[in-house]
Amino acid sequence: MKRFKRIFLIVLDSVGVGHAKDAAKFNDLTNPNTLLDIDKATNGLKLPNLERLGLGYLDDYKFIKKENAINKSYILRLNETSNGKDTMTGHWEMMGINTIKPFKTFFENGFPKELIEQIELKTNHKVIGNYATSGTEIIKQLGERQLKTKELIVYTSSDSVLQVAAHEDVINIDELYKICQICREITMKDEWKVGRIIARPFIGNDANSFVRTKKRHDYALSPSSKTYLDHLKENGYDVISIGKINDIFNSCGITEAYKTVSNHDGMEKTQNLAKNSDFNGLCFVNLVDFDSEYGHRRNVNGYKECLEEFDKDLGSLIQNLNENDLLVLTADHGNDPIAPGSDHTREQVPAIFYSKVFTKGTYIGESDTFALLGSTIAANFNIYDETLLNDDISPKLI
Image (tube, rainbow, N blue to C red; front, side, top):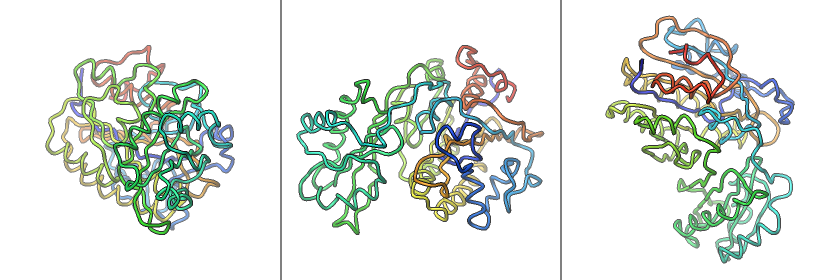
């Protein structure tokens, strides 16, 4: 029988908790551990609300102790089954998709000449860039030229993405979005099929003042099969997206969507739903700043501050939860800010299931798949389908 009416699933984007057993296969040779390495590098994280929920069970942190947990959470480590360490792969696995064939990447040599020519032909804009780099760096390098010429700055990363940057004064938002839609159509060809096309508008007067705006928009592939989100929606439950969840699933299985401009904004929107909405189903939240602002930029201190800000917001959210609410905290991959390079890291992720009605919460081990999250949610709403996931742990959680 349904136990919880509202479930809040919050993804702390990139907050990994220890290298996966197969990390070396993904070029992570330094045993990354995003959360522990930040803790060590900054003389200790102070996360009292996460500590109360049992985060201390996952590692030997300086100030976060398992003895201070309040026994209202079940805590696990989740291992990723899918072949990848990117955003889409991680989120899709949470909702029941095992990605065996990884998404195409163009990290080493940029995009093929033929693809770039198609973009230029169909958008009527010349392309500059076409290499893998940080988004903030490439607008410093090419932004002044783009402002004068109206060319498109195209770039990629170690993820399966094609990103298009343009100054808002010379290519307005609507035009940039249309350009990205054209790029999405072009890259549906198998040999060019990247996971996401991302619009990256920026503003400013010169290289020293250029900043990306919050009008980013992702054009993702639709999930390769039905997910738990689709099953929830088809069974009449609410599936509310906050942050980039709607983009990641290309609106599939989503009943209501809210964009965000920061982690804090995402938590405020989540808290507003907790206080004012009597929804029946899932509120699925992604907090991307950990990853985009601090992980990729290898900004250890910024990452620490972002975590501690989240912890304060978490305390406020918990105060507004009811006894028939379930809160689930997790991540989609790692992004250790002390690891070499700027790529994601293949890591285990936390899974913390909190409810005011739990009385015997504790650490209960590991799961071999992120999909334990989706199956647990589906089981709560009586739509658990064993054909979607071979994992008999999750129904026992609730």
